[in-house]
Image 1 (tube, rainbow, N blue to C red):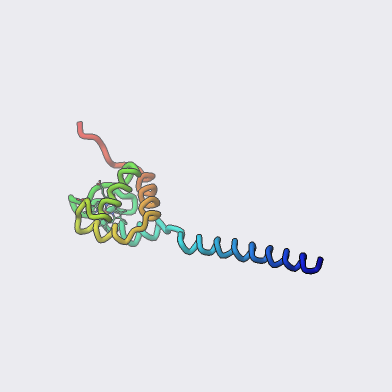
Image 2 (cartoon, rainbow, N blue to C red):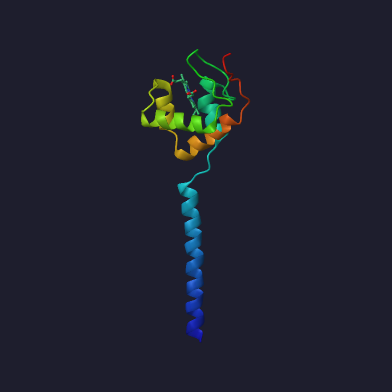
Length: 117
Ligand code: HEC
């Protein structure tokens, strides 16, 4: 009986440690994305914090653009299939999670985009 109890306790302890480790590994593998920090320290310099500033005439407005379009653009800059000297450097430093979060952030901004008549 005594043996059964201690075996049981060992099993319970293993499960507890195992799930704590799994939780820790998940947190380490997926650090939370700090969108505000990335936007203010990187993107805002050229696109503005709301994505509507244009540093140069070649800098597109991205505020209010569709999230899937923004994500596709960032993935293409990262892979090199869309080539731009500024955006290549920026996109190569971004993870999939950061691309998703940044795309959602800029898509949620007020749009200044319009259709030509
Ligand atoms: C050094 C200036 C600079 C910085 C910093 C910068 N961009 Fe850009 N971005 C540009 C320019 C210039 C273009 C247009 C490139 C082209 O012609 O393909 C562009 C294009 C884009 C596009 C494609 C838009 C479209 O309409 O096709 C997206 C999306 C984008 N940037 C997102 C971001 C995000 C997100 C960040 C921050 C992580 C960022 N950019 C940082 C200059 C910059």
